[in-house]
Length: 124
Image (tube, rainbow, N blue to C red; front, side):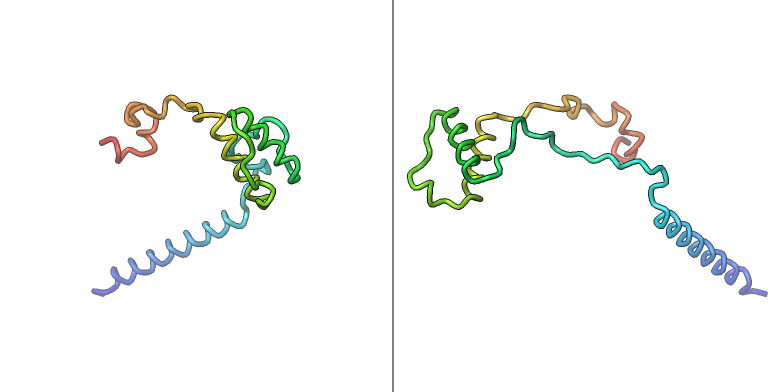
């Protein structure tokens, strides 16, 4: 039959697609079988306690401003707590200076390291 090879190709393609979908569904349903928690990446905790109340935030802001040789601005009492917290965090970031280079090897040529295995298209 002239159309039998085309029909067979369609059947095989459909079978592969259905099998792939079933395998994907089984993997998604089972999830992580190891039972171990996943690894998350986040910033390290800030040193010291985090101010929670308005009074604690004002005191922390006052301390950060004093560290920079500044004082609380006029009318700071009228600022909402969220604004005081934002200004405190900004002053703390300014006082702490630029972040340290946590990974000095980031400037290494990716094709001269193991990453060429992960992204070979970018190296050749």
